[in-house]
Structure formats: structure tokens, C-alpha cells
Amino acid sequence: MPQLTVDCLDEIFEHLADDEFTLRSCILVNRLWCKVSIRILWRNAWNYNFSDFRTLIACLPSESKKILSNNRIMISTPTLEIPTFDYASFCNILPVKRTYKMLELLIGKQIGNHSISPQNLFIKAHITTQEVFKMFMNQITSLKILDYLHYQEIGFTSYPGARNCLKYLSELYCSSDTSSDFFYQLSQICNNISLLDITIVDRLPHGLINLISVQQSLKCLNLSIYYVPTDLSLLLTRVPNTLTKLRLYGGSDGISLSFIIRLTNLQELQLSYEVKEWFKDFEILQYTVFPKLQVLKFKFELPNWELLVNFLEHNGKNLEEIYFCDYSMGYNNNSLNLSIARYCPILKNLSTGIESNELETLKIIVESCHNLKSIKVWCGGPFINEKDALEVILEYSKNIDEIILYYHYDAQIEIFPEELDSIFINWSNHIPQKSISLILITDTCIVSSLDKNYKNLKIIEKYIDLGIIKKFEITDYEDLDYI
Image (cartoon, rainbow, N blue to C red; front, side, top):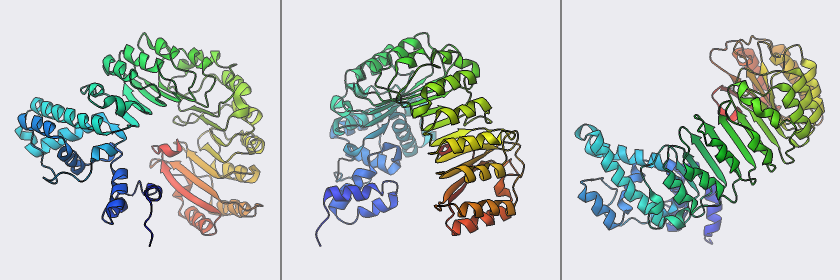
């Protein structure tokens, strides 16, 4: 039997990337299978366990082991022999703070947490982390993702090999409580970062501003703002026009949105503000045209609806996804919902709130947006009930593939088994026949959602068996896959 090539094994084993048990079993087949499996198992340091860190200690060069020995740092290793592979070389996703914490726990476990002072433990963990990162920088040929959030103790950018290791870094997760020198050094090495995730918690290091300024291929910027430094506007003006995704979290009324105007290549815009007044600058954007914009998302509050209607009038024709107030208790403005139907003809995904006396608006939306594949609507309280939502969506939508019902906290049962059965009978007669996914987002405190009636669940089971419902899930408010 001919042996599979490395490229072929790589492609096959990639499908097992989330199946650690099977990958570890493949290690035992032969050396080739072992090498391909090990490369996948060791590439994400978020997944390293204590045994993996012991293996890394065994891989340290002699001079590093001597430094540990001189500082009375003794960590037991799986073997006294030279390890089979340079395991550190396979890593391309490196979380700095977690690496330190795991080594600290490992040392504490080895010595006994009650036998060492916190200060001494910190010193030993710091020395060990330094030596491990020297090995990472020396052996990793091209690190892809670096997580440097809330940690500033290891200045590894000056270690031997760091320039080659970090040169093609594509994703950086960092926070403003990191030293400015780290960002300055990184800006001398990396100028092709594609995703930059920044958490601003206090002062803004000038090195970070410089790092953004030198980026030539930045595509995605995530900004979580928990403190507004005086020079934040300077950072925002340095954001390059290569950006295709902008996501702003937190914020305050002191943040101007005017910098967004020049980001004409944006394909996704997400503004997650918890206070409506923080959108006071949105009037600057209402008439701006973003010719490539496809995704518009507001997790919490929305700007003034008149401004948003104007924005949709100028940008709705290319929008494929709209999400309004996914994290709040729903949002409804009938004029805004009607503007979706009027200005967004190729919409595929929609999340919004529609009041119970505005059912005709839902009908207009699903009839006008012919490409609509997924729709999430609030149910109960002031919003439409689940019976009306299912009936209208399934009767008037041509291409619907997924319905998500997001229950309001005071939802009451509005649909009975015989009504639910009738709705799916009508859908099963749809030509051409098509199956759908039905997702319920609810909470244990909600006692009156569709799933609380046992007979409703039996109806759903029947249509799953018939292939009319291809997927049925009940999840809670914390499931981010649907928020």
C-alpha cells in the first residue's frame, strides 16, 4: 500500500484539529504520522497542559537549564533523554500571560504553595518564563498570533531570533497597560499585522500609536475602551484606510466617530455602546457612503433612528447583515424597520425587534428582502409572539434557512401544539420543499417559552424526523454564537 504524503496527511489531520484524543492516537502509528500530529497538537499554546509545559522545560537548552538550577528552580520532566522534537518550534499561537501563569502554577505545585512565599514564587516563575520565551523566540520561525494582554514583565522582543519569529505576525492582542518600549520594538519588526485587538484601560503608550502608524496591511481593528486618554484621538487618526473591519466596544461621549469617515474600505462596522448619548457624533456619519459595507452591528444601544435611516439610505444597497441591539432587551422603531425593507434589498441576516401591533412590517421585510437566510426577532412582552413570527416568516419568506426566537423576560406562551403543527404542515407544502433551523434563545427564569410545553417539543421532534426541521436548539442569553 503506497504511503500517504506529508501534504495529504496535513490536509486530513487538519479536520481533526479539535479532536485531541484522535490526534494523540495517530502519534502511535509511525514517525511520519507522529510528526504531522505533533505539529497540530503543539501549534496553539492556549491548549498546553502541565505535561506539555514539563516537556518544554525538558527542551530548554543547557544554558537555560543551568540558569534554572542556579536559581534552585527544579521542575520534573517526562524524560531525562533529549526530546524527540523541538516542540516549541511548532507553536504559532502564543498567549504570554497564560504561559507565565501555567509556569507559576507548575512551580508552585512542584515546590508546594505553602513552602514558598508569593514574592519568591513570582521571581522563580519570572526567570522560568524568560528562559521558555528565549526558546520560543529562537525556535519559532513564524509566529502568527500573539496575545500580550495585561502582561508586561517579559521583554522578549530583544531576545535572539525574535525578529525572525515576529516578522510575519498577523494577529496581536494587547492592552494599554503594556510598556511603550515593547510597542516601539514591535513596530521595528512587524508592519503587516492584519488584526489588532486593543484594550484601553489607562494611559495610551506612544509606542502603540507608532505601531498602528507603520501597519501596511491592517484589516481588522477591535478597540475595547474602558478609559478615554487625552491622546486617543491621535491614535484614531493613525488608523490606516486598509481597514475592512472596525469594532468599537465601551467608550464615552468624549470619543469622536469622525475618524471613521475616511475608512472607505470598511466591510464591517460594529459599534457596541451601552449609552445612547455616546452616539452624538453619529450625525457625522449619516450621509457618508461606505461602498463596500456589508455588515452593520449594534450590540447594545442605537443612534437616533432618524440618523440611522439616513445611513441605511446611503449604505443599505450592499448590506448583507444587520444586527440591532442584540444584547439589550430588544429594540423597535417601525420607521427604522421599514427602512430596512426599503433600502436593503440583498440582506441575508437580520436581527431586530418588532412590536406586536406591527406585524405587517415583518411581512414587508421578508417579502422585500428576497435573499434573507436568517432572521432573529424578539418575542413576548411588547414584541410579536412566537406564533405570529413563525407564521409570517414561513409564509412570506422565499429563502429563509434559520429562524431565531429571542425571548423577552416577560414572555408568555402564545402558541399551542395544534397551532405549531399547522404552521409546519403549511411549510412542508412549500415548493420547493425546504428544511429550516429553529433556535430558541431563552433563560431559566422564562417559564412560558415555546419549549416549556412538552407537546410542542413532540411536534418539533416529528418534523425533525420528517426532515422539515434540520436543526433545533435551545440556548441561553450567554451563547455568543447567536448574539
